[in-house]
Length: 240
Image (tube, rainbow, N blue to C red; front, top):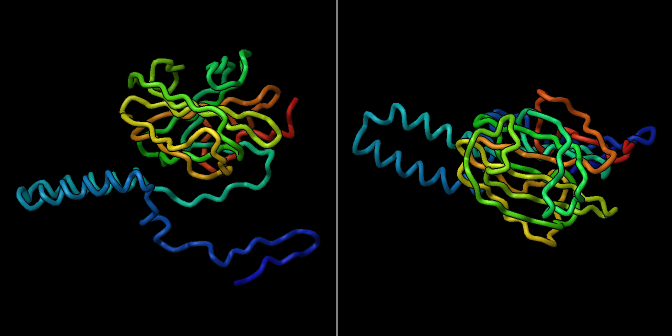
């Protein structure tokens, strides 16, 4: 194993194991939750193909899409405990002041909320925006309507609050969309999570909302493309 090299106080990260092969793009890893669905879909399509061969022309593309949808590509999370990282792939649909749900324990004042919309073509695996302990979890069943640019108070959602070591709380919400039918979030209150680590997913089109702590402003703009686990949403050291 090649060790990191240091020069002029800068440590050069080890890049010997970076995967640049075709597999990274054509055969990405699949989230375990997606493997179940892919397995069931594959079985159904195989049976259809055996008894109704003409269906292969459209079942194979559908199976490829199921595989593609549940992909879980590797991500490299920026270093720095002060950084809040995007929990989802997608596009920033809006940034506005909103009073967070009281169950999240973020106070009763308006906080800046960054909303990230995920289409069915985005990676739907969600990653923790910061490191810390899960302080609050609230699941709300609901409807399935378009959430691209609405507050969507009636949609199915999972509210999550992480308390950092410095006491700062970061709240974020998984919201099911028009096609989504299930939010997957196995987190438990008291559990420790690491920034950039996978914590759940939403199936088939959805949104992630992130509440900025008071005095913290996002470093992103509406329409900007987000990459879960990599894009920096905000810097806690730049609090005003």
